[in-house]
Amino acid sequence: MKKFLLLLITIPFIELIFVMLCGKMIGLLPTLLLILFTGILGVYMAKTKGLKAFDQLQKSIKNGQAPGDAIIDGVLTLIGAILLVLPGFVSDILGLLLMLPFVRKMAKPGIYYWLRKKMKSKQTILMQR
Image (cartoon, rainbow, N blue to C red; front, side, top):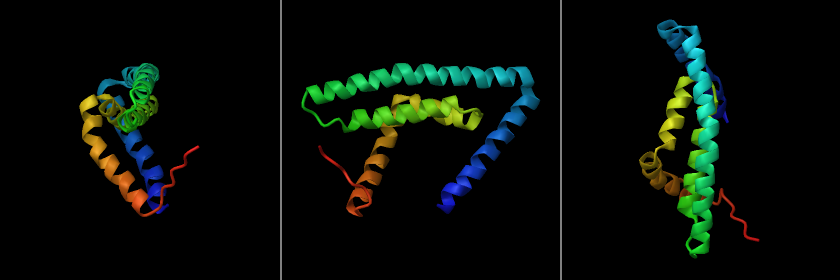
């Protein structure tokens, strides 16, 4: 909980510093337009990539395959889109990186490891209906 609180305070502070530096370097109006553009891009990417991830999920299920990769791709894409919508350049960079397929592919082993670790320690409960 302490780490989360620290992140909750630190991340906006870092974002603010980068926005102020960018505003000083390129000016106020271009900075605001850039923030607005990345927000619109985030909404667009969430819609298009989200629909594509949903289609992949349906195809996996239809083919009788476990939809693990499709779910992780969808979640990472959604996180990337949310980061793009948030005002700030650090979150935009992270969001854009998560939109790249090879970055998501590199992140998957770590996510699978984390999920297995949570399941072994019984911190994660999977429910089946």
